[in-house]
Length: 525
Image 1: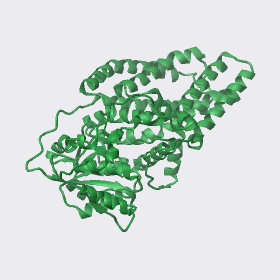
Image 2: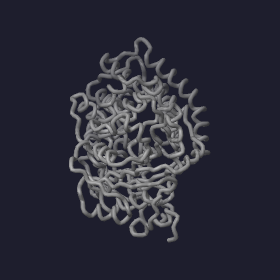
Image 3: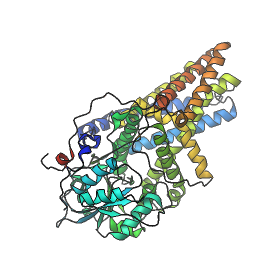
Image 4: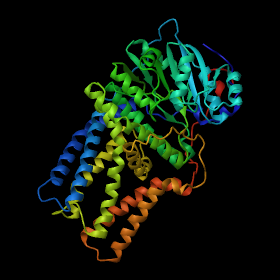
């Protein structure tokens, strides 16, 4: 194992990536599981209550709008059912098995493009301090910056700069695989600082020769940098909490591209990281699971990174994820996977179609107000709310519970406000527009970015005009109901788009005192 002093990078002393992560413990996850067991029968009963009412004969208003509404509701019912099924199988693994002796060699790969040195430096320093294996750290510079070569030399890492810049991140990693030979490979994005015990908590699970990779959470340490980052971190907490625990219980956890340890044999069998996908980690996971390799998820924060700090960065990140996962749908359908694994990949990919349903829900009140056309007939507003509101409300409660209290309204609003990026991503995938891999900026802009939230702002303007049109006319009970729904959508969209409207404003929530780099490595300060 390499042991080098880490005090050279003094800026890390105030870096949020060296603080104590806010992450639920095992008891909190067990409490969440118990609450979900109570909510499940209630949710099933309310779903039956709502859909029995919705699908009654004579409920059809405008046939096209009714068909679209039913299709959207059934899509979301499938997603909700998949969510329940996944969370039902949540698994928390006990302490990692001991690492086989002698300690194996691990090549630690840190791909870099144009990120600032103050972001990359602590990542390299922490990688050099990893315990439990014979670690060799490689800084993979795709831009060819002399200062990165100097930084690598400062810590004793190996600097790698390739001549052919193909395949984006996947190509960079594959180039490094050809230059290295350790039986295990750990990958960290250049902003993710690993804890010294990362390998001690993960490598033992690879004692099982059938395990291809061990994944850990992607945690945003800079959540207090602004409302948007806090909301994005909350979204991550839901996925890497209740959902990832369930996927692990179903042996279906996919690789998420960072904070992960691979068995080189598995990577070699599939020819390395897929270079034709915007989400190389997702495509790689499909191939490995198809060949019978297994995955392990360790539900413990062992590396801390930086989330998007402005709306433009968030939109770029989410669009890349959406396009990559949607483009992988044909591969999921064709792959020879166990049924539960196939369904898990389908659910993950199809989540990025949800934007179509959000857009429809927002459009329906405006359509009713402007044209009088509505999807439902033979029902009053209070009847609809009586059947729909409990079903929808319990669904939202279940999502919050599954995140062990870490999922917030702001996270939900941010998702809704960016519904259009999922719609656009779908259209681009259908048109076979692959797009290019765009690195998420590690430092956000403080200025407002209204253009990044333009679809949400246009939607708000359309709904406001509908409300104004309705108020200016005669207010029937049905019209009041649609005005209420339009106002609800305006509120959610406004909360989600607010960070882009006002710019970044650091949150005042206190964080635990961060430690310095030397302290992280167990060295005297």
